[in-house]
Figure (cartoon, one colour):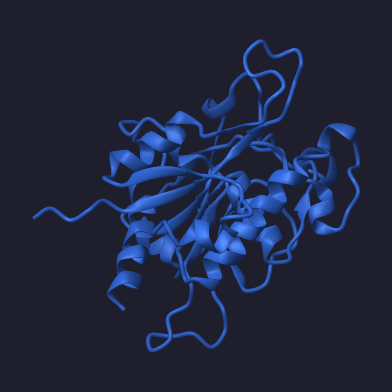
Length: 263
């Protein structure tokens, strides 16, 4: 008998009421980017969009329905989520979505549900654990390379420096050169509690991957799984060998889910 596919809860992006929008103008929309859903399904899991909490269903109730939490990309985080004021109005971000996703992260960790963050998801995981961000890398970090170009979008690439002796290094140990896409203007600044850096951009040292490594955990007491990358594996062409293979990242997440289920 074939086992049921993993159920992956994906945090939603938000469109808020906009009278200029011809369809659903006065309504709030929750959505997922199609590449993310297909990436999950490509490796045999079923993606589900996670709604906001409701008087009948708390955040913990929602998370209990899924095997793991995937935080997708999208709008900027609000600087108020990490104790700052926006340096420019256009960097005000989406506080409502921040609060929704921060609650999801805390619930997932409390329930020992594995968490995978992509782009904004890496920034959200960091902020949820008490870290902060560069509101704009180019403005706040002297000598920074360009990490986002609206025209090039996911065809903007840069090399990746993976920290030795980390799970990410082991994942790609067969490769001597690592390259990823880049679609972000914010970035991780101070690290959240118990997060460890696993990759950086070699040109400006911007953090590109982090993993939750709480103290006091080991083989007898495994740590909750939370890992996040600043690039977009789901945007990559699986046949493009110039970029890091996108499959191992998702497979490690799925493996963490299976290991949790077997404990």
